[in-house]
Length: 280
Ligand code: SF4
Image (cartoon, rainbow, N blue to C red):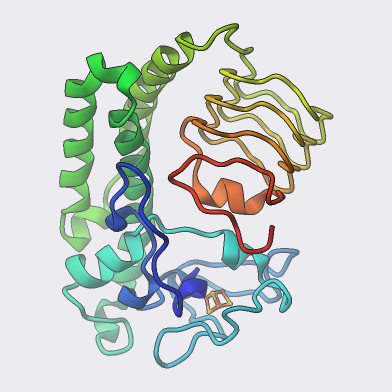
């Protein structure tokens, strides 16, 4: 969430512009208002959708930035809007904020989660476009990316009324074809663990290079020292998974929230587009 308000946006990786990375300084704390959360291991208190978090300051910054984990809000360190917050704040609503324009607040809260889904798709499609192995799909990828970009450029009402599911489905098929092309070139290509329940599995040192773990449940799994190079991790649930010393170089469709939700060490190797979480 806007935990990074006082920090500069993370450096853009290859092919990913700053527009797909959260820039909390250019947002009006939308994630800290629009989204609900429940008191749990991730959040120290309950909060309803549309209710500003009690830690949100008048300047839209987080009052406990830098000590979120210690104060019981690790969920805020994991959340990433993929740049949706600043786009809704600056583009969709032209710099108007929910405090100064309370009559528009509900529309802002409705547009934000839709924009986040669209920006997540843009993240995946941008990555796919940068994969040389998928060059034969570039025209289709470019068309898909432009289509999502047009939707993201819609006005607030169009965004709020948009059903992203069919667009996600369509993009998912295309990303699957990209994955096949990329992993097809991996010697001894890994196994198919799509959607597998591997929660708590002992996979330390496993050879998963080129495997597909798309949508796999890997909560608390031991992946320490695993070879996950060029593995497809789209939508894999890595919460609490041990990635200590694992090699994720070139992993497909891995996102910062997945990485931040996992555990790792200085020996963990990440794709160049992602940053090492400060708590590792
Ligand atoms: S604790 Fe509240 S203000 Fe801080 S990042 Fe989380 S939701 Fe935002």
